[in-house]
Image: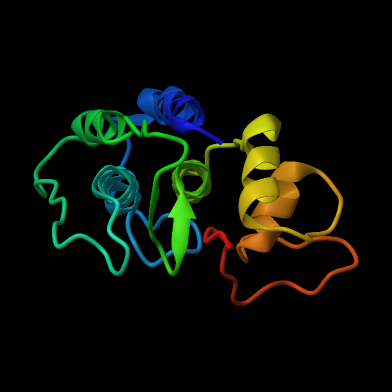
Length: 182
């Protein structure tokens, strides 16, 4: 996965959520404990943090910075912050820390996963029908969830992160992605 995939996921998020900017973004975002607004701001936070990690290449721990989105910001502006935070481009040989040495493809895959999963959470909270794009889900599963069951990539990704059922498998109550490389 690459920065282009992150930008594709963010463009999809903006496409799906943009028409719903006047709705109540303070409702709970699906299964997470945050509002839709806070969940969108969380996506921007994670994308910026991942880009910072890849740019600075720390070998142990996270960089000591944070993103704060003003609490009075309109959802349109939150989506603009998400878009601005999605510029994840790095040398493919770069390594940075995320629970172990992680390459740029791992950070990109995490950025795509955060964007898709939290867009799903927000659409669920707002009652908007949406499924994450198959091609992006396939890339995330391949990079972050080795050994998951076969099936529709969107359903498998949602199952892998405890957001959905998957026929023949118990619902997950905890999970972790495998971003670090050996």
